[in-house]
Length: 125
Image (cartoon, rainbow, N blue to C red):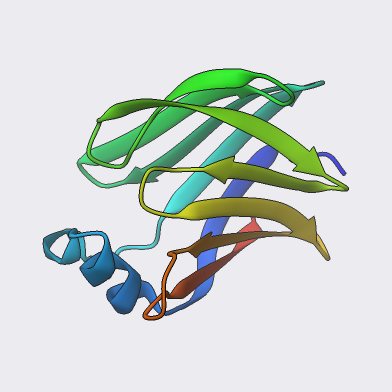
């Protein structure tokens, strides 16, 4: 499934709980996040934008890549594709993304007994 496109936030679950667990509750916003994905085979550029803030990562599926967290901290992680689902282990959560019925569905899952699954669904614009 091709990911390339621009997507605008449609719905999200456990947003505030997720931000609290990863220590970014002060970053909470009511603005609609716009996610732009450029895919060229296994190479991706993944950018999320809000007014006054942009977060972008470039990665290649099947390789260990240097990525950045939402706060800009650098880390290395393998990027895998399980079926049509991208999977990346961030330092504080596991990220997956897939296209379901032409919508970008992203999940961020924090570990542990008090773990939270933050789900964000964005429509293609």
